[in-house]
Length: 187
Image 1 (tube, rainbow, N blue to C red):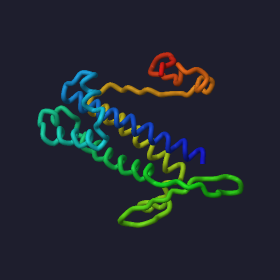
Image 2: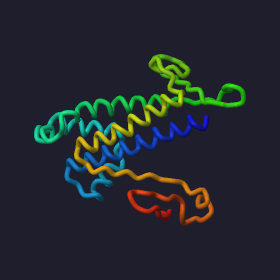
Image 3: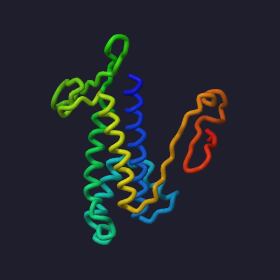
């Protein structure tokens, strides 16, 4: 169960980074500074940003000519990644006995069209750790491909939790690292 939860967390983290990249791409296209970018995209969802980027790509010949030929393929794969992420995260997860003393999560999906199904969505078992990890890795690679296609600099921020800090001091919660030393953040 812990491995499943870790991999689901990777899907969430990588998808969040992809969401940020889409917002950055919209702002880059519109030529907005950071403050205007955050103001504009703060209330925009993933699908809205992706649809805007598709619109820019389809309607602006200059934009399309500046982009590599693979941008259309990347955008299509992002749509597929969004479907996989939604299948995974919008399922219900129930603990069940697994092997002798272990517990794993069983995925249950209820849809208005197909009714109740357990674990087998689209003919595959999304509760398998390797499958979940594959989804997380595809989303991660898609983000890098999108950033390269749009010529955005690669920015990756990873967070590591310092167990000795969490809850022990109200002014320090996470340490972040982005090509430099880790530093405490106020919050």
